Length: 481
Image (cartoon, rainbow, N blue to C red):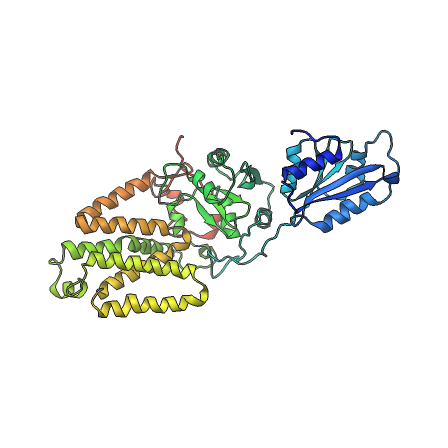
């Protein structure tokens, strides 16, 4: 059925059939006008609309007696222009627009003998209050985080970007259950090539429903797939705002408390939000995180290469101190087992109730630590190496580098076990070549280091003066595709 029928009862029956007679679909029948001459019905889904708004601004004004309409004025025009007190109201003749509006939290007013329906937006979705960010905590700076409601998020972002150039393009994704997706950018600042590519990729998405924002991330990252994240999350208002002022594009999916930011370059995963609010660590913080990332990836592999191929090259005391001798397992298997056990502990800590986390930590300390060393199952240095590796990995965990750390660590560990330092050097060279080939929405992933851009180095491994950063214009090296 394409158009609304004239018969009110038939329209109500069709809507009820479309919703499979769900019990929360409510129909409020009204008879208004002189001696109830006009039959109407308000149709809505209970629980997702503001009933007080509908009562005060729709039902109550309609039930009040009004004079006979002028011959030149249609009843529906009078209702739209003089009676309904809602700020946002529109009409439609399309049946699908009617049902879609009901699903999205609108009330629909149908009038007998009229092939039009009046849509009154009145959603009242359940949502949590605005809270501080959890995944991107910082010592200083704004603490407000995004919520699951897209309109609330846009409201929060607009409160920080007070300009006419701030633009929001909203589209619907999902053929069965439409979900709103908003593309945010600042006109005049946004890189046009990046914006065009983001819109093209999102518009190319054909899905039945949006179960997770990951489907939007996948299409933005493009192909081929990679373990390196080429888009970035942020649940912080200041993180989204600063990205928009740098010419980037933010994408918000209704129902998810994160903004997806593109492009995302490798150096950005070494940055932290509070660096722009405190003077400490302008030159050292990001270098320290880069060093931690390198340790988390390469330290176990270097240890295995020394144990397998260069034990005799080390001084005797050092060799006896750091290389397994009386332990039951070879060094390689010690490292593999420790990595596996640490992964189990981390996963259990996130899955179990908080009351059980302390018990799990205690058991883990006993099993992995003192007992394993005393029983000569694990060499103490192996335990230290994996401990440092795990701590280094946690430093980049909330920035999206967990998958990169875990995957590369295993690859280099296997390479070092079979081929030693020669294999490691070749593997690292291949890794750098691979990273150079990656692009984030058309922008080289290692930019501005490769290709080198002197003017963009002011916010990479160190943070330049904030006044210069604020007044500078960001440019991106793009491909021609």
